[in-house]
Each structure stands twice: as C-alpha cells, then as structure tokens.
Image (cartoon, rainbow, N blue to C red; front, side, top):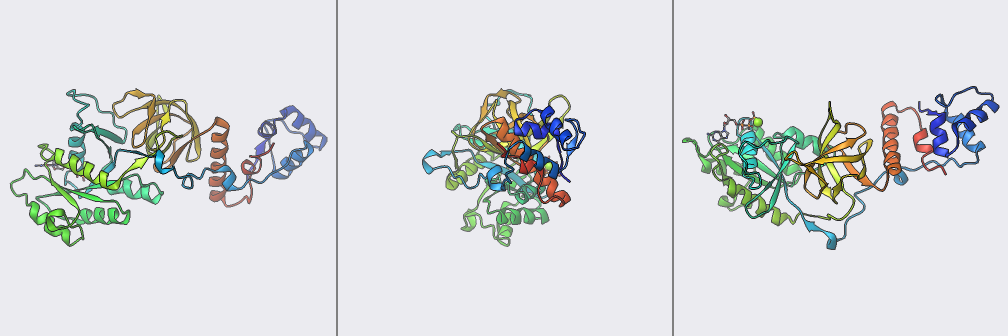
Length: 370
Ligand code: GTP
Ligand code: MG
C-alpha cells in the first residue's frame, strides 16, 4: 500500500513539517516528520490546512509526445539509423567494424573507439550514418516490443559462401514486420566459393527481390575483412535514406530513445541514447522511463565531451537518477519539478500495476495540490 511521510506531504503543501506534526498531535497521533501516515490521515490533514485534494488524471501528469507533431516547415533532414542483422558467422561484427573504419573523420590509426552502443560515420560526401553497434535480432525485437523502433534501415548480411540460413529468414521477417527497408550485404565475396547470384535467387523465395532480379531491394557485394564494396554499401544506405525522406525538428526540447544503460562504478547511472528529435543539451532536465535527471555531461562516440546532440546522434548521458531500460523514452521538460512529478507519477503507476493493490496513491493524489 502507498504511504507518504509527514515531511513529504508538508513539502507538497508548502507547509512546515512541524505544523503538520502539531496538527496530527491535536488529532491524537504522535508522529515525527519522518514517519509515514496512511491515505485517510493525509487527506484529513490536507483538508485541515485548507488545501484541495485533487485526483490527477494520467493525461494531466504524464507526457504524451506522440500527439504533438512538429510542423512540416520546422523539419530538417536527419541521418539514417541502420542496424546490422544476419545469420551466425555471416560477418555482422566484422561489417560493423569495417563500417566504423570507413569513417573519414576518424583517420587516426589505432584511435580508441569508445563503445557506446551506437556510432556515427561521416562518409566522403559529408553525409552521416548512425550505426547501431549491437548485431543481432534480440535488440531489434526487444526495442520494438517496447514501442521504440529507432531503426530506419536493416542491413541484412548474407555470407556468399553459405547462403540463406534460419537467422537470415528470421531477420527478413523482423524487418518486414517492422516495415523497415532492407539492404542486402552479400558478404565474404573474397572467398573463392562465393556465389552472389545464388544468394539473389534464393532471396526471391523469401520475397526479398533485389534490383538485379527486377525488384527494389538494393544489394551490395562486400568483403568485411578486405574492405571491398563498403563505399557502395554507404552509397546504398544514403540512397535508401533519401527515399525515406528522414526528417526531424532540431530546434526544440529533445526526445531520445535509450539504446543501452548501466550503472558505472565511477560515473553512476549512464545511458546511451539516440536523439529522435530536438537537441539534447548539457544542463537539460529530463524524464527517462521512471527516472528523472539533469544532463551533467554528454559524451559522443569518440569519447569526447560535447555540449549538445541533435537528431539521429547517439550520445552517452550522465546525470540520471537511476538506470533506465533499453527502449525507454527520454524527454526534456521545463524544470526539475516537472521532471520529478512525471517520474514519481510513473513510479507510482509501476508500483500500482506491480502490486495491483491501491486504487489511488499519494504520489498521484497530491501532485497538483496548491
Ligand atoms: P556471430 O556474432 O557469431 O553471429 O558472427 P558474426 O555474424 O558477427 O560474424 P563475424 O563478424 O564474427 O565473422 C565470422 C567469421 O567470418 C570470422 O572468422 C570473420 O573473420 C569471417 N569473415 C567475416 N567477414 C568476412 C569476409 O568478408 N571475408 C572472409 N573471408 N571472412 C569473413
Ligand atoms: Mg558477431
């Protein structure tokens, strides 16, 4: 059952804790400011102090971001977000590594690559591509189940010496279910036994019709280990991105999706987020899942501190109140009070659904008290 401490209630009524204790004493209750009181007592106190108990509806407290669409004229092109999928050993990790190396801005040999769950590459034509650095289908489906579909394009890796395998088919099905366009990377083309044409033909059976077979799915022959065809793959991604007309409004309060999060020994809770719209800035106050926080530092995929991060930028965020889940939405709000209000509301709701006990709870009830 929900309860509230006398001090907490006092804070919410903007009264002195001691005054509440006195009033409770008059009501025949001996409590200190740190003790909790039940719902009826709290309601009685609120009444005594001349406040109104307002039951707050979800719509008043929580943030509904899906409803406010940004006007068309405020939208600017944003970088595509790609995920790499494919069968075991077909070269997903090798391709992720190879793509990272194609980055023209990170020329320095042996440079330290920070692992933050996603990275951005800058192609020769200065165009940017955000790559989710987690191969495999689990991340993709988990995120989707949580309503967070951040992937714009799926790179389907198929080893030319092996062909269509169970996880290839699984990846195709996931991409189709999510309505995410596929680019086929026919990998290991350097191998003597590689047969790209056979792959193209076999893909037909799974309704992936590549351009050479008169379809509209792009396919690129690559060798992740030799670095062959990577420029073509980048071109294919950019072409697909153009067709998708990916846009977001940069000049607004940021929204982002958590890619991964953990508790770091030295730095506290750390989350890698992908900004979906707006610009996330140092000092911003936010809610993420059931946590609130204030951006203490932003660290990019090179391990460098940055002041802000715009749409499609992956960035590590420090300054969270707790560790959120992958797929959680981060929303920047006006002030700390608002952030706490929403976070507390969500925590209360989470507790409520876990215990399925209390029909109302204090966090909700006293949120809007004047
Ligand atoms: P899992 O994570 O186990 O599913 O594998 P993966 O898809 O990440 O494949 P990974 O990148 O680990 O590559 C598997 C093996 O294939 C490794 O031994 C790679 O060196 C090799 N390999 C990957 N790409 C190529 C390529 O283009 N050519 C050749 N010859 N070998 C490759
Ligand atoms: Mg791998």
